[in-house]
Length: 85
Image: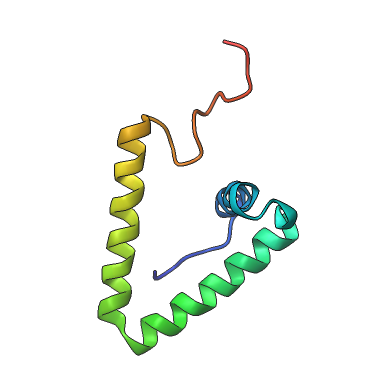
């Protein structure tokens, strides 16, 4: 998880997740707070058990890759979502 930066893409993805699972918390502020909490947790994990942190990162990346292959899209759906074709 080395080098994770909270950026617009991460915020957008977290908002997507919040809208799906916790719609009452689906605000930009909550998304940033969740990302900060996760970032701190992964940082602590990387210090305490770096091998497991790397294994977890690999599993997350593989999961995202598999999801993208199944959907044929990025993890948030088609990039032209909501637009007229």
